[in-house]
Length: 92
Image 1 (cartoon, one colour):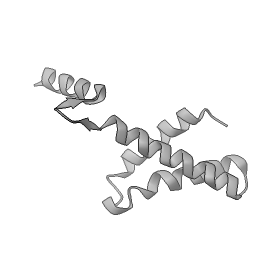
Image 2: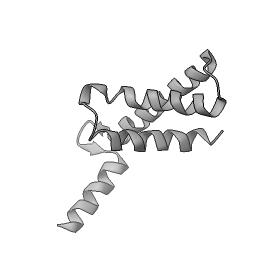
Image 3: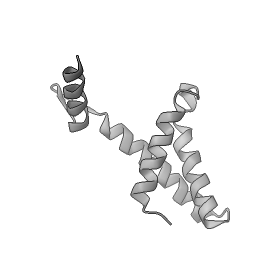
């Protein structure tokens, strides 16, 4: 199996791409479904352990994306948001 961090990043990436095609209320299901599909395809069977691992991969990718865009109180932002804002201001 691939490194779980790489799979988590790939699931987060595919989730962001799918946001333009899927209604907002179903976006939270996409990473879980992708995680279950990945683990089922890799293991070649549907078993409780395989499905649970897929759900955990999907949940981890949702959490990784949410933390990267988290705003901290008192107007302090995460490094991802700060870097994005600096690049955006340089383009203007």
